[in-house]
Image (cartoon, rainbow, N blue to C red; front, side, top):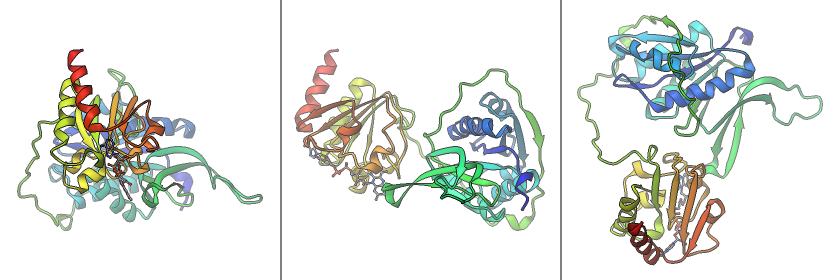
Length: 343
Ligand code: FAD
């Protein structure tokens, strides 16, 4: 493989129902950062049906080029046709780096595409940078420059692994939603548009979609919430979460939780914060009856202000908290709610 042939940072621009997912903008923001030291361009790969209208938005968020694969067969996400489309784009254009969101779609698509184009994939990355590999070369050992260094939690979050793909291209990663920063959109920015037809074959279509049932929810997605009132095992029961909901109602917040709460069946998984839940970055994060395990803090430590309430003054949550209240949440939370009602 001639590594020199591979150029550019490519982003899979995920869309659902012809609406770009937030992860597409987050990946473009990171791609721009990675492209600078490599002196290369950022390309968005937009796959779907009737999606050309989304090109300008991708340009405004940092794409220099957009490769559009537009076909009625690509209306809804299905593994085979999408994997065929993305791997065909990679084989044709030979990108140096390919980023895919670690969403339900991306977790399905990324590994399949990486296998098809015979390269490696680092899943669920939280940090991406350009650097030398191996990181700490021993004297005499060759260090390769300008490699994509892909960092992700490993062994249940107990260690952080930095992984590279120095001998193969493209370097591929799936990236956790909510971790990378979008750029401020540049109104009126334009991208070069390339329409690409990968030529579908009937054997692609192993799956037929009979019906799509959308989950209806009247709650704010915790990844979009400005204030989160998050509860842990210390809250004690599903019924006791009413106390946290009352506090959230008074301050315009949304209730979220730790994994222990989901495992106990007190709240649904979509409200879970952390390594195997969602990564959140609200203005204010209340951690109530949450111990602060590393797998939890991995998903919330970037919050602007963290307020912890815990009866154990040595709970690790206080290490990441800006404000801490030590005491029984059953007494503190109702009192706090009463006081905030007066404001
Ligand atoms: P606990 O650790 O049991 O803490 C409860 C806290 O409540 C304690 O600190 C206690 O002092 C306090 N408390 C009890 N009663 C009161 C009271 N009356 N008043 C005030 N304080 C009180 N966890 C996540 O949250 N998100 C994840 O995404 C996640 N992913 C994981 C992935 C892997 C691979 C693994 C191995 C684990 C993962 N975990 C995750 C689990 C994580 O390790 C912890 O077990 C979990 O976060 C603990 O939840 P908790 O803090 O609610 O419960």
